[in-house]
Length: 126
Image 1 (cartoon, rainbow, N blue to C red):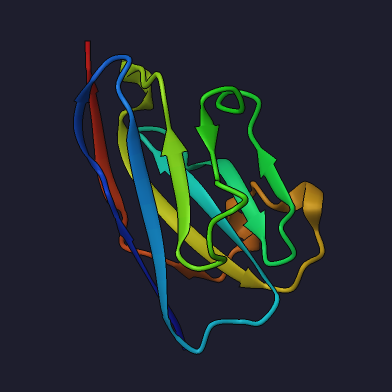
Image 2 (image 1 turned 180 degrees about the vertical axis):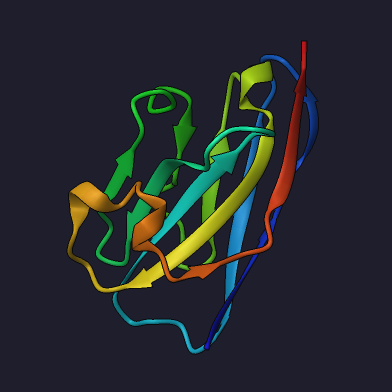
């Protein structure tokens, strides 16, 4: 059973930077997608970025110029580096994992993922 734990959230001012971490414990899949999602109060959970165990990444258009999953980092933990943060980036950030390396065009859909962390809160003030 895979267990995911997010960390690194906090409160920052607009324009600031945060690096979130998604650590896995238990039996982690050898081939997988790990993705980051965000959920603001009253809104749907939205996919932001995903990383495959083979190194491929995918980003939502809304964040692709500001959010990065470092490619040169170890596979696990999976980091999400967020720069030039905006108040609308505030919310609970979750990481999620699914075994397998297929489904590239589905990797930002929450329905794809079978394991979720508990989330880490990000608050960006203006």
